[in-house]
Length: 242
Ligand SMILES: Cc1cc2nc3c(=O)[nH]c(=O)nc-3n(C[C@H](O)[C@H](O)[C@H](O)COP(=O)(O)O)c2cc1C
Image (cartoon, rainbow, N blue to C red; front, side):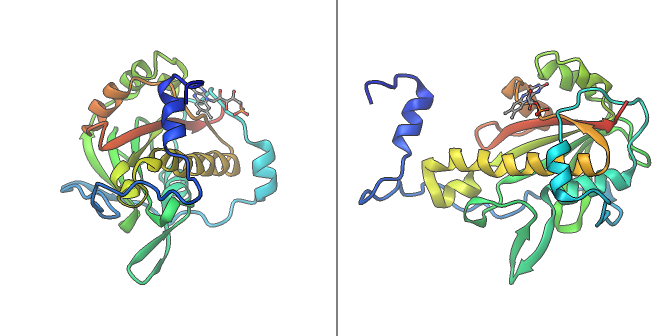
C-alpha cells in the first residue's frame, strides 16, 4: 500500500478480489432497471436498421475518432439505429431485460441521453432514451450544443455536431451487488456501450468521438442528476461526415 499514494491506486488496491477474502457487502439497495421520468412529451423512434452492409470486422478496423461534422441534419432512423444498438433491449429472460451491451451481473447501469440540435423530425432539446419502449422523452426543449462544448472544457468540435449522446451510469444498480468494486464495473459496462456507438457510426458512415474530458458537476446540472447517484461517463457528439 505504501507504494501507492494517489486515491486511484488506493481504490484499486482496496477493491481487489483476493482468494479467501470475501468482497465488501453491498450497502445500497436495488433501484430497478429503468429510470422513469414522468413524460408528457414522448417521441416514438422508428424501427432501427438491422443491417448496414458493413461487416463487423471491417467496422472494427475502420473505426476512428472523427471530430468534423457536416451541417446536415441526422435522420431519426440514424438516431434510432444508434440508440438501439448502443443500449437497446434485445430480448427478455422472464422479467429480466437482455441488453445489446454486456454488463457486470447483468445489472445494466447505463443510461443514455440525447442532445438534439439538428435531427429531422425532432425538436431541438435534451431527451432521455427509454429502452422499454424504444422512444425518447423530451426533458427540456432548447439548444444545448454550445453549453455542452463549454462543459467539455471548450472542445470546439462539439458545437458543430447536430447531436450528442450523453452516457451515464446509475451506480446503485451495480453497487447493490458488487459494492465498492462497482466503480470499476460501471466504466467497463459503459465502455462497451461507447464501442457500440463507434461501430454503429462506422456502419452508418457517420462521425463520432468519445469525450471523457468534461466538468462533472456542470454535466450533471445539465442533466438534472445527482453526480453521486448517476455518474456521468461520456459525451459522444455524432453527425454526418464532412
Ligand atoms: C476514455 C477516453 C476519453 C477520451 N476523451 C476525449 C476527449 O475528451 N476529446 C477528444 O477529442 N477525444 C477523446 N478521446 C478520443 C481519443 O483521443 C482517441 O480515441 C485516440 O486519440 C485514438 O484515436 P482513434 O479513436 O481514432 O483510434 C477519448 C478516448 C477515450 C477512450
